[in-house]
Image (cartoon, rainbow, N blue to C red; front, side, top):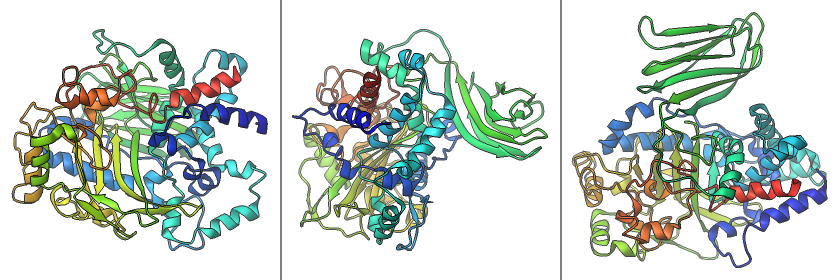
Length: 557
Protein backbone atom coordinates (compact mmCIF):
# COMPACT_ATOMS: atom_id res chain seq x y z
CA UNK A 1 0.00 0.00 0.00
CA UNK A 2 1.30 3.41 -0.89
CA UNK A 3 2.04 5.91 1.92
CA UNK A 4 -0.49 8.34 0.40
CA UNK A 5 -3.27 5.78 0.50
CA UNK A 6 -2.44 4.81 4.10
CA UNK A 7 -2.51 8.46 5.21
CA UNK A 8 -5.85 9.04 3.48
CA UNK A 9 -7.47 6.05 5.15
CA UNK A 10 -6.01 6.99 8.52
CA UNK A 11 -7.50 10.47 8.17
CA UNK A 12 -10.89 8.97 7.35
CA UNK A 13 -10.75 6.70 10.39
CA UNK A 14 -9.81 9.54 12.70
CA UNK A 15 -12.74 11.57 11.46
CA UNK A 16 -15.02 9.21 13.40
CA UNK A 17 -14.29 11.29 16.55
CA UNK A 18 -15.55 14.82 16.18
CA UNK A 19 -13.54 17.77 17.37
CA UNK A 20 -15.92 18.25 20.26
CA UNK A 21 -15.78 14.61 21.40
CA UNK A 22 -13.93 14.41 24.72
CA UNK A 23 -15.13 10.92 25.65
CA UNK A 24 -12.74 8.40 27.13
CA UNK A 25 -13.11 6.22 24.04
CA UNK A 26 -11.90 9.05 21.84
CA UNK A 27 -9.05 9.94 24.19
CA UNK A 28 -7.80 6.37 24.23
CA UNK A 29 -7.54 6.47 20.46
CA UNK A 30 -4.24 8.32 20.88
CA UNK A 31 -1.65 6.31 18.94
CA UNK A 32 0.83 6.48 21.80
CA UNK A 33 -1.51 4.32 23.87
CA UNK A 34 -2.36 1.72 21.22
CA UNK A 35 -0.59 -1.48 20.21
CA UNK A 36 1.55 -0.38 17.30
CA UNK A 37 3.28 -2.60 14.72
CA UNK A 38 6.46 -2.70 16.81
CA UNK A 39 4.52 -3.98 19.83
CA UNK A 40 2.54 -6.50 17.78
CA UNK A 41 5.79 -7.86 16.35
CA UNK A 42 6.84 -8.78 19.90
CA UNK A 43 3.41 -9.95 21.07
CA UNK A 44 2.80 -12.05 17.99
CA UNK A 45 -0.70 -12.97 16.84
CA UNK A 46 -3.37 -12.90 19.53
CA UNK A 47 -3.39 -16.09 21.60
CA UNK A 48 -6.67 -18.03 21.46
CA UNK A 49 -8.98 -18.46 24.43
CA UNK A 50 -9.83 -22.06 25.28
CA UNK A 51 -13.49 -22.19 26.30
CA UNK A 52 -15.19 -24.63 28.61
CA UNK A 53 -17.39 -26.10 25.88
CA UNK A 54 -19.52 -27.97 28.43
CA UNK A 55 -20.44 -24.82 30.37
CA UNK A 56 -23.50 -24.15 28.19
CA UNK A 57 -24.89 -27.47 29.44
CA UNK A 58 -24.79 -26.11 33.00
CA UNK A 59 -26.74 -22.92 32.32
CA UNK A 60 -29.69 -23.89 34.55
CA UNK A 61 -27.40 -24.82 37.43
CA UNK A 62 -25.45 -21.57 37.08
CA UNK A 63 -28.68 -19.60 37.08
CA UNK A 64 -29.85 -21.17 40.35
CA UNK A 65 -26.53 -21.18 42.25
CA UNK A 66 -24.29 -18.23 43.11
CA UNK A 67 -21.59 -20.66 44.25
CA UNK A 68 -21.43 -22.46 40.91
CA UNK A 69 -21.67 -19.14 39.07
CA UNK A 70 -18.77 -17.61 40.98
CA UNK A 71 -16.64 -20.75 40.75
CA UNK A 72 -17.09 -20.78 36.97
CA UNK A 73 -16.25 -17.06 36.83
CA UNK A 74 -13.01 -17.47 38.78
CA UNK A 75 -12.00 -20.29 36.43
CA UNK A 76 -12.66 -18.06 33.44
CA UNK A 77 -10.65 -15.24 35.02
CA UNK A 78 -7.71 -17.57 35.59
CA UNK A 79 -7.68 -18.49 31.89
CA UNK A 80 -7.95 -14.88 30.72
CA UNK A 81 -5.10 -13.79 33.03
CA UNK A 82 -2.88 -16.83 32.39
CA UNK A 83 0.63 -15.97 31.15
CA UNK A 84 1.46 -16.82 27.53
CA UNK A 85 4.79 -16.68 25.73
CA UNK A 86 5.63 -13.73 23.50
CA UNK A 87 6.57 -14.24 19.87
CA UNK A 88 10.04 -12.85 20.66
CA UNK A 89 12.20 -13.30 23.72
CA UNK A 90 13.12 -10.16 25.62
CA UNK A 91 16.75 -10.23 26.79
CA UNK A 92 16.40 -7.84 29.72
CA UNK A 93 13.40 -9.19 31.66
CA UNK A 94 13.23 -12.45 33.65
CA UNK A 95 10.18 -13.78 31.78
CA UNK A 96 9.01 -13.25 28.21
CA UNK A 97 5.36 -13.84 29.08
CA UNK A 98 2.29 -11.62 29.26
CA UNK A 99 -1.33 -12.21 30.36
CA UNK A 100 -3.40 -13.84 27.63
CA UNK A 101 -5.80 -10.92 27.23
CA UNK A 102 -2.97 -8.47 26.54
CA UNK A 103 -2.14 -10.32 23.32
CA UNK A 104 -5.66 -9.64 22.03
CA UNK A 105 -6.82 -7.03 19.56
CA UNK A 106 -8.12 -3.50 20.01
CA UNK A 107 -9.41 -1.02 17.47
CA UNK A 108 -5.96 -0.21 16.06
CA UNK A 109 -5.22 -3.84 15.18
CA UNK A 110 -8.77 -4.29 13.92
CA UNK A 111 -8.60 -1.43 11.42
CA UNK A 112 -5.16 -2.52 10.18
CA UNK A 113 -6.38 -6.08 9.59
CA UNK A 114 -9.64 -4.98 7.99
CA UNK A 115 -7.85 -2.60 5.64
CA UNK A 116 -5.44 -5.38 4.62
CA UNK A 117 -8.30 -7.81 3.96
CA UNK A 118 -10.49 -5.36 2.10
CA UNK A 119 -7.68 -4.17 -0.15
CA UNK A 120 -7.09 -7.82 -1.10
CA UNK A 121 -10.61 -8.26 -2.50
CA UNK A 122 -11.14 -8.13 -6.24
CA UNK A 123 -12.99 -5.11 -7.63
CA UNK A 124 -16.24 -7.02 -8.00
CA UNK A 125 -15.93 -8.38 -4.49
CA UNK A 126 -15.44 -4.89 -3.10
CA UNK A 127 -18.51 -3.68 -4.97
CA UNK A 128 -20.66 -6.50 -3.54
CA UNK A 129 -19.10 -6.33 -0.06
CA UNK A 130 -18.07 -9.96 -0.33
CA UNK A 131 -17.40 -11.86 2.86
CA UNK A 132 -13.74 -12.53 3.66
CA UNK A 133 -12.54 -16.10 3.21
CA UNK A 134 -11.46 -17.86 6.41
CA UNK A 135 -8.00 -18.61 5.03
CA UNK A 136 -7.57 -14.95 4.07
CA UNK A 137 -8.42 -13.95 7.65
CA UNK A 138 -5.79 -16.42 8.87
CA UNK A 139 -3.26 -14.80 6.55
CA UNK A 140 -4.24 -11.31 7.69
CA UNK A 141 -3.71 -12.18 11.36
CA UNK A 142 -0.25 -13.50 10.46
CA UNK A 143 0.54 -10.42 8.37
CA UNK A 144 -0.47 -8.10 11.19
CA UNK A 145 1.96 -9.84 13.55
CA UNK A 146 4.89 -9.35 11.16
CA UNK A 147 3.97 -6.04 9.51
CA UNK A 148 6.90 -4.30 11.20
CA UNK A 149 9.29 -6.29 9.01
CA UNK A 150 7.86 -4.46 5.98
CA UNK A 151 8.26 -0.97 7.45
CA UNK A 152 11.26 0.92 6.10
CA UNK A 153 11.49 3.08 9.23
CA UNK A 154 11.95 -0.01 11.44
CA UNK A 155 15.21 -1.66 10.30
CA UNK A 156 16.50 -4.63 12.27
CA UNK A 157 18.85 -2.45 14.38
CA UNK A 158 15.97 -0.28 15.56
CA UNK A 159 13.83 -3.32 16.35
CA UNK A 160 16.64 -4.83 18.42
CA UNK A 161 17.06 -1.57 20.33
CA UNK A 162 13.33 -1.54 21.00
CA UNK A 163 13.54 -5.07 22.43
CA UNK A 164 16.50 -4.13 24.61
CA UNK A 165 14.62 -1.14 26.03
CA UNK A 166 12.00 -3.42 27.58
CA UNK A 167 13.89 -3.99 30.84
CA UNK A 168 11.19 -4.08 33.55
CA UNK A 169 8.03 -6.09 34.13
CA UNK A 170 5.97 -2.89 33.84
CA UNK A 171 7.42 -2.15 30.40
CA UNK A 172 6.78 -5.75 29.39
CA UNK A 173 3.13 -5.37 30.41
CA UNK A 174 3.01 -2.07 28.54
CA UNK A 175 3.48 -3.83 25.20
CA UNK A 176 -0.21 -4.72 25.37
CA UNK A 177 -1.27 -1.07 25.34
CA UNK A 178 -4.13 0.44 27.34
CA UNK A 179 -7.04 0.18 24.95
CA UNK A 180 -10.45 0.37 26.58
CA UNK A 181 -11.89 -2.61 24.67
CA UNK A 182 -10.18 -5.80 23.48
CA UNK A 183 -11.27 -8.74 21.33
CA UNK A 184 -10.05 -12.33 21.45
CA UNK A 185 -8.96 -13.69 18.04
CA UNK A 186 -12.27 -15.49 17.51
CA UNK A 187 -14.30 -12.44 18.51
CA UNK A 188 -12.39 -10.26 16.07
CA UNK A 189 -12.66 -12.88 13.33
CA UNK A 190 -16.44 -12.84 13.75
CA UNK A 191 -16.62 -9.04 13.56
CA UNK A 192 -14.50 -9.06 10.40
CA UNK A 193 -16.65 -11.73 8.78
CA UNK A 194 -19.77 -9.79 9.66
CA UNK A 195 -18.79 -6.50 8.04
CA UNK A 196 -21.35 -6.86 5.17
CA UNK A 197 -24.20 -7.13 7.71
CA UNK A 198 -22.76 -4.30 9.81
CA UNK A 199 -22.71 -2.00 6.79
CA UNK A 200 -26.22 -3.06 5.81
CA UNK A 201 -27.62 -2.30 9.27
CA UNK A 202 -25.80 1.02 9.31
CA UNK A 203 -27.71 1.94 6.15
CA UNK A 204 -31.10 0.44 6.97
CA UNK A 205 -31.25 0.41 10.77
CA UNK A 206 -31.38 -2.38 13.33
CA UNK A 207 -34.04 -5.12 13.11
CA UNK A 208 -37.08 -5.27 15.39
CA UNK A 209 -36.79 -6.22 19.06
CA UNK A 210 -38.73 -9.47 18.71
CA UNK A 211 -38.53 -12.40 16.31
CA UNK A 212 -41.41 -14.85 16.01
CA UNK A 213 -40.36 -16.73 12.90
CA UNK A 214 -38.91 -20.26 13.05
CA UNK A 215 -35.43 -20.84 11.79
CA UNK A 216 -32.04 -22.32 12.47
CA UNK A 217 -28.93 -20.66 13.86
CA UNK A 218 -25.37 -21.77 13.32
CA UNK A 219 -22.86 -21.02 16.06
CA UNK A 220 -19.19 -21.81 15.73
CA UNK A 221 -17.89 -23.86 18.65
CA UNK A 222 -14.25 -23.90 17.59
CA UNK A 223 -12.08 -23.37 14.54
CA UNK A 224 -8.55 -24.60 14.96
CA UNK A 225 -5.56 -24.95 12.61
CA UNK A 226 -4.45 -28.57 12.50
CA UNK A 227 -1.52 -30.46 10.99
CA UNK A 228 -1.78 -34.25 11.08
CA UNK A 229 0.81 -36.66 9.62
CA UNK A 230 -0.52 -39.46 7.46
CA UNK A 231 -2.95 -41.77 9.34
CA UNK A 232 -2.62 -39.71 12.55
CA UNK A 233 -5.68 -38.69 14.58
CA UNK A 234 -6.67 -35.88 16.89
CA UNK A 235 -9.66 -35.57 19.19
CA UNK A 236 -11.64 -32.41 20.01
CA UNK A 237 -14.18 -31.81 22.74
CA UNK A 238 -16.25 -32.51 24.64
CA UNK A 239 -18.90 -30.18 23.26
CA UNK A 240 -22.28 -29.87 24.92
CA UNK A 241 -25.14 -30.38 22.46
CA UNK A 242 -28.57 -29.37 23.72
CA UNK A 243 -32.03 -30.70 22.91
CA UNK A 244 -32.89 -30.24 19.26
CA UNK A 245 -29.34 -29.23 18.35
CA UNK A 246 -26.78 -30.99 16.17
CA UNK A 247 -23.02 -30.80 15.88
CA UNK A 248 -21.48 -30.13 12.48
CA UNK A 249 -17.83 -30.61 11.54
CA UNK A 250 -16.12 -29.28 8.44
CA UNK A 251 -12.52 -29.59 7.27
CA UNK A 252 -10.63 -27.17 5.04
CA UNK A 253 -7.13 -27.41 3.65
CA UNK A 254 -4.87 -29.90 1.94
CA UNK A 255 -5.72 -33.57 2.35
CA UNK A 256 -9.28 -33.00 3.54
CA UNK A 257 -10.79 -35.32 0.88
CA UNK A 258 -8.81 -38.27 2.20
CA UNK A 259 -9.32 -37.44 5.89
CA UNK A 260 -12.14 -38.92 7.95
CA UNK A 261 -14.35 -37.42 10.66
CA UNK A 262 -15.94 -39.25 13.56
CA UNK A 263 -18.54 -37.62 15.84
CA UNK A 264 -19.51 -39.63 18.89
CA UNK A 265 -20.97 -39.57 22.39
CA UNK A 266 -20.77 -42.03 25.23
CA UNK A 267 -22.45 -45.41 24.81
CA UNK A 268 -23.19 -47.77 21.93
CA UNK A 269 -24.78 -46.50 18.77
CA UNK A 270 -23.85 -42.90 19.42
CA UNK A 271 -21.35 -42.47 16.64
CA UNK A 272 -21.32 -41.30 13.05
CA UNK A 273 -18.35 -41.85 10.76
CA UNK A 274 -17.77 -39.77 7.64
CA UNK A 275 -15.00 -40.94 5.32
CA UNK A 276 -13.68 -39.09 2.33
CA UNK A 277 -15.95 -36.07 2.78
CA UNK A 278 -15.32 -32.52 3.88
CA UNK A 279 -18.22 -32.29 6.35
CA UNK A 280 -20.10 -34.40 8.88
CA UNK A 281 -22.98 -33.89 11.37
CA UNK A 282 -24.72 -35.67 14.24
CA UNK A 283 -27.82 -34.87 16.31
CA UNK A 284 -27.08 -36.12 19.82
CA UNK A 285 -27.81 -34.51 23.18
CA UNK A 286 -25.11 -34.33 25.84
CA UNK A 287 -21.31 -34.50 25.70
CA UNK A 288 -20.10 -35.05 22.15
CA UNK A 289 -16.56 -35.58 20.85
CA UNK A 290 -14.99 -35.14 17.43
CA UNK A 291 -12.08 -37.14 16.00
CA UNK A 292 -10.29 -36.25 12.78
CA UNK A 293 -7.98 -38.77 11.11
CA UNK A 294 -5.69 -37.98 8.19
CA UNK A 295 -5.53 -40.21 5.16
CA UNK A 296 -2.34 -41.82 3.94
CA UNK A 297 -1.04 -38.34 3.21
CA UNK A 298 -0.92 -35.55 5.78
CA UNK A 299 -3.83 -33.25 6.48
CA UNK A 300 -2.90 -29.56 6.85
CA UNK A 301 -5.71 -27.12 7.32
CA UNK A 302 -8.41 -26.28 9.84
CA UNK A 303 -11.14 -28.10 11.72
CA UNK A 304 -14.35 -26.15 12.32
CA UNK A 305 -17.01 -27.41 14.72
CA UNK A 306 -20.43 -25.71 14.69
CA UNK A 307 -23.69 -25.98 16.62
CA UNK A 308 -26.92 -25.96 14.63
CA UNK A 309 -29.67 -24.75 16.98
CA UNK A 310 -33.47 -24.65 16.39
CA UNK A 311 -33.72 -20.92 17.03
CA UNK A 312 -34.37 -18.04 14.71
CA UNK A 313 -31.10 -16.14 14.11
CA UNK A 314 -30.97 -13.32 16.66
CA UNK A 315 -27.89 -11.38 15.54
CA UNK A 316 -29.08 -9.92 12.26
CA UNK A 317 -26.40 -7.24 12.08
CA UNK A 318 -23.62 -9.85 12.22
CA UNK A 319 -22.89 -13.13 10.47
CA UNK A 320 -24.86 -14.93 13.18
CA UNK A 321 -23.88 -15.12 16.85
CA UNK A 322 -20.31 -15.07 18.14
CA UNK A 323 -18.40 -18.35 18.46
CA UNK A 324 -18.15 -20.04 21.87
CA UNK A 325 -14.44 -19.18 22.14
CA UNK A 326 -15.13 -15.46 21.71
CA UNK A 327 -14.21 -13.08 24.54
CA UNK A 328 -14.61 -9.30 24.73
CA UNK A 329 -12.93 -7.37 27.52
CA UNK A 330 -13.17 -3.81 28.77
CA UNK A 331 -10.37 -2.35 30.89
CA UNK A 332 -10.33 0.71 33.11
CA UNK A 333 -6.98 2.48 33.55
CA UNK A 334 -5.78 5.27 35.82
CA UNK A 335 -2.55 7.29 35.52
CA UNK A 336 0.12 6.12 37.97
CA UNK A 337 2.25 9.29 37.96
CA UNK A 338 2.38 12.87 39.17
CA UNK A 339 1.06 12.02 42.61
CA UNK A 340 -2.28 10.84 41.26
CA UNK A 341 -4.02 8.49 43.69
CA UNK A 342 -6.86 6.03 43.25
CA UNK A 343 -10.31 6.48 44.73
CA UNK A 344 -11.27 3.69 47.14
CA UNK A 345 -14.76 2.20 47.22
CA UNK A 346 -16.41 0.31 50.05
CA UNK A 347 -18.23 -2.80 48.77
CA UNK A 348 -19.08 -4.26 52.17
CA UNK A 349 -22.65 -5.29 52.93
CA UNK A 350 -23.30 -2.19 55.03
CA UNK A 351 -22.07 0.20 52.35
CA UNK A 352 -23.90 -1.52 49.49
CA UNK A 353 -27.08 -1.84 51.50
CA UNK A 354 -27.06 1.83 52.42
CA UNK A 355 -26.41 2.98 48.87
CA UNK A 356 -28.96 0.72 47.19
CA UNK A 357 -31.74 1.35 49.66
CA UNK A 358 -31.24 5.08 50.12
CA UNK A 359 -29.82 6.39 46.89
CA UNK A 360 -29.57 3.79 44.14
CA UNK A 361 -30.43 6.38 41.51
CA UNK A 362 -27.31 8.35 42.41
CA UNK A 363 -25.01 5.40 41.65
CA UNK A 364 -21.89 4.47 43.57
CA UNK A 365 -21.44 8.00 44.81
CA UNK A 366 -18.27 9.46 46.26
CA UNK A 367 -15.35 7.18 47.13
CA UNK A 368 -14.58 6.48 50.77
CA UNK A 369 -10.93 7.45 50.50
CA UNK A 370 -7.76 7.34 48.38
CA UNK A 371 -4.86 4.93 47.93
CA UNK A 372 -1.51 4.88 46.16
CA UNK A 373 -0.86 1.17 45.42
CA UNK A 374 2.42 0.07 43.87
CA UNK A 375 3.01 -2.53 41.12
CA UNK A 376 2.98 -5.39 43.63
CA UNK A 377 -0.53 -4.37 44.70
CA UNK A 378 -2.17 -3.38 41.40
CA UNK A 379 -1.44 -4.42 37.81
CA UNK A 380 0.76 -1.65 36.41
CA UNK A 381 2.11 -0.99 32.93
CA UNK A 382 4.55 1.48 31.40
CA UNK A 383 4.28 2.50 27.77
CA UNK A 384 7.38 3.21 25.62
CA UNK A 385 6.84 6.97 26.04
CA UNK A 386 7.21 6.59 29.83
CA UNK A 387 3.52 6.94 30.70
CA UNK A 388 2.46 4.62 33.54
CA UNK A 389 -1.03 3.30 34.22
CA UNK A 390 -2.81 1.15 36.78
CA UNK A 391 -5.55 -1.35 35.93
CA UNK A 392 -8.46 -0.40 38.17
CA UNK A 393 -11.22 -2.49 36.62
CA UNK A 394 -11.77 -5.24 34.12
CA UNK A 395 -14.94 -6.53 32.42
CA UNK A 396 -14.92 -10.01 30.84
CA UNK A 397 -17.71 -11.36 28.66
CA UNK A 398 -17.31 -14.87 27.22
CA UNK A 399 -19.63 -16.61 24.77
CA UNK A 400 -19.35 -19.94 26.57
CA UNK A 401 -23.02 -19.38 27.42
CA UNK A 402 -25.62 -18.54 24.77
CA UNK A 403 -26.32 -15.20 26.47
CA UNK A 404 -22.69 -14.77 27.54
CA UNK A 405 -20.97 -15.11 30.89
CA UNK A 406 -20.63 -11.66 32.51
CA UNK A 407 -17.73 -11.01 34.90
CA UNK A 408 -16.21 -7.85 36.31
CA UNK A 409 -13.15 -7.29 38.50
CA UNK A 410 -12.20 -4.20 40.47
CA UNK A 411 -9.16 -3.28 42.53
CA UNK A 412 -9.63 -3.00 46.27
CA UNK A 413 -7.55 -1.99 49.25
CA UNK A 414 -9.42 -4.70 51.21
CA UNK A 415 -9.25 -7.48 48.60
CA UNK A 416 -9.96 -10.45 50.84
CA UNK A 417 -13.37 -9.34 52.10
CA UNK A 418 -16.89 -9.45 50.60
CA UNK A 419 -16.56 -9.95 46.82
CA UNK A 420 -12.97 -11.20 47.15
CA UNK A 421 -13.46 -13.52 50.11
CA UNK A 422 -13.96 -16.64 47.96
CA UNK A 423 -10.98 -16.00 45.69
CA UNK A 424 -9.53 -19.45 44.90
CA UNK A 425 -5.92 -20.62 44.87
CA UNK A 426 -5.80 -20.66 41.06
CA UNK A 427 -5.94 -16.85 41.13
CA UNK A 428 -3.41 -16.58 43.97
CA UNK A 429 -1.10 -18.87 41.95
CA UNK A 430 -0.94 -16.31 39.14
CA UNK A 431 1.19 -14.15 41.43
CA UNK A 432 1.74 -10.46 40.99
CA UNK A 433 -1.10 -8.14 41.90
CA UNK A 434 -3.99 -10.34 40.77
CA UNK A 435 -4.95 -11.25 44.34
CA UNK A 436 -6.03 -7.65 44.96
CA UNK A 437 -9.16 -7.66 42.82
CA UNK A 438 -12.76 -8.39 43.79
CA UNK A 439 -15.35 -9.91 41.47
CA UNK A 440 -19.05 -10.20 40.71
CA UNK A 441 -20.74 -12.15 37.93
CA UNK A 442 -24.09 -12.68 36.21
CA UNK A 443 -25.31 -15.23 33.69
CA UNK A 444 -28.94 -14.18 33.27
CA UNK A 445 -31.24 -11.19 33.43
CA UNK A 446 -32.98 -12.51 36.54
CA UNK A 447 -31.75 -14.10 39.76
CA UNK A 448 -32.43 -17.82 40.12
CA UNK A 449 -30.71 -18.60 43.43
CA UNK A 450 -33.33 -18.82 46.20
CA UNK A 451 -30.69 -18.33 48.91
CA UNK A 452 -30.00 -14.60 49.39
CA UNK A 453 -26.55 -15.43 50.80
CA UNK A 454 -25.71 -17.53 47.76
CA UNK A 455 -24.79 -20.42 50.06
CA UNK A 456 -21.75 -18.59 51.43
CA UNK A 457 -22.95 -18.01 55.02
CA UNK A 458 -20.40 -20.37 56.56
CA UNK A 459 -17.53 -20.45 54.08
CA UNK A 460 -17.44 -16.69 53.24
CA UNK A 461 -19.66 -14.71 55.63
CA UNK A 462 -18.75 -11.21 54.43
CA UNK A 463 -19.47 -12.24 50.83
CA UNK A 464 -22.76 -13.79 51.96
CA UNK A 465 -23.76 -10.55 53.67
CA UNK A 466 -22.92 -8.49 50.56
CA UNK A 467 -24.87 -10.85 48.29
CA UNK A 468 -27.89 -10.57 50.57
CA UNK A 469 -27.95 -6.82 49.99
CA UNK A 470 -28.23 -7.18 46.20
CA UNK A 471 -30.62 -10.17 46.19
CA UNK A 472 -34.11 -9.17 45.03
CA UNK A 473 -35.71 -12.60 45.18
CA UNK A 474 -36.04 -15.42 42.67
CA UNK A 475 -37.22 -13.92 39.39
CA UNK A 476 -36.10 -10.46 40.41
CA UNK A 477 -33.30 -8.75 38.47
CA UNK A 478 -29.78 -10.08 38.89
CA UNK A 479 -26.95 -7.76 39.99
CA UNK A 480 -23.34 -7.10 39.06
CA UNK A 481 -21.72 -3.65 39.07
CA UNK A 482 -18.18 -2.26 39.13
CA UNK A 483 -17.51 0.97 41.08
CA UNK A 484 -14.71 2.03 38.70
CA UNK A 485 -16.56 1.36 35.43
CA UNK A 486 -20.26 1.72 36.25
CA UNK A 487 -20.18 5.41 36.99
CA UNK A 488 -23.03 7.87 36.89
CA UNK A 489 -26.65 7.88 38.03
CA UNK A 490 -28.23 4.45 38.47
CA UNK A 491 -25.21 2.47 37.38
CA UNK A 492 -24.74 0.81 40.74
CA UNK A 493 -28.05 -1.05 40.33
CA UNK A 494 -27.18 -2.80 37.06
CA UNK A 495 -26.21 -6.29 35.89
CA UNK A 496 -24.22 -5.87 32.61
CA UNK A 497 -26.46 -8.11 30.52
CA UNK A 498 -29.47 -5.79 30.73
CA UNK A 499 -27.69 -2.87 29.13
CA UNK A 500 -25.79 -4.98 26.59
CA UNK A 501 -28.96 -6.58 25.23
CA UNK A 502 -29.51 -3.28 23.38
CA UNK A 503 -26.11 -3.30 21.63
CA UNK A 504 -26.70 -2.19 18.06
CA UNK A 505 -29.94 -0.36 18.86
CA UNK A 506 -30.29 3.40 18.66
CA UNK A 507 -30.64 3.98 22.40
CA UNK A 508 -28.29 5.62 24.88
CA UNK A 509 -27.05 3.87 28.00
CA UNK A 510 -28.25 6.90 30.00
CA UNK A 511 -31.78 6.22 28.77
CA UNK A 512 -31.58 2.51 29.59
CA UNK A 513 -30.57 3.27 33.16
CA UNK A 514 -32.52 6.48 33.66
CA UNK A 515 -35.89 5.92 31.99
CA UNK A 516 -37.70 3.83 34.62
CA UNK A 517 -40.91 3.61 32.58
CA UNK A 518 -39.35 2.32 29.37
CA UNK A 519 -36.56 0.35 31.06
CA UNK A 520 -37.66 -0.77 34.55
CA UNK A 521 -35.22 -1.97 37.20
CA UNK A 522 -32.48 0.23 35.72
CA UNK A 523 -32.71 -1.72 32.46
CA UNK A 524 -31.81 -5.06 34.01
CA UNK A 525 -34.72 -7.19 32.76
CA UNK A 526 -34.96 -8.82 29.35
CA UNK A 527 -36.84 -6.74 26.78
CA UNK A 528 -36.07 -8.44 23.47
CA UNK A 529 -35.23 -11.79 21.84
CA UNK A 530 -33.41 -10.22 18.92
CA UNK A 531 -29.94 -8.88 19.71
CA UNK A 532 -28.55 -7.17 16.57
CA UNK A 533 -24.90 -7.29 17.65
CA UNK A 534 -25.20 -10.31 19.95
CA UNK A 535 -24.91 -8.18 23.11
CA UNK A 536 -21.85 -6.22 21.92
CA UNK A 537 -21.79 -2.41 21.88
CA UNK A 538 -18.44 -2.26 20.03
CA UNK A 539 -19.76 -2.25 16.44
CA UNK A 540 -22.01 0.80 16.88
CA UNK A 541 -20.65 2.81 19.82
CA UNK A 542 -17.42 3.11 21.77
CA UNK A 543 -14.94 1.71 19.25
CA UNK A 544 -17.69 2.01 16.61
CA UNK A 545 -16.05 -0.55 14.37
CA UNK A 546 -18.80 -0.23 11.77
CA UNK A 547 -17.79 3.36 11.01
CA UNK A 548 -14.12 2.32 10.95
CA UNK A 549 -14.94 -0.38 8.39
CA UNK A 550 -17.08 2.03 6.39
CA UNK A 551 -14.24 4.55 6.22
CA UNK A 552 -12.05 1.95 4.51
CA UNK A 553 -14.85 0.82 2.19
CA UNK A 554 -15.72 4.40 1.21
CA UNK A 555 -12.09 5.18 0.44
CA UNK A 556 -11.75 2.29 -1.99
CA UNK A 557 -15.14 2.93 -3.55
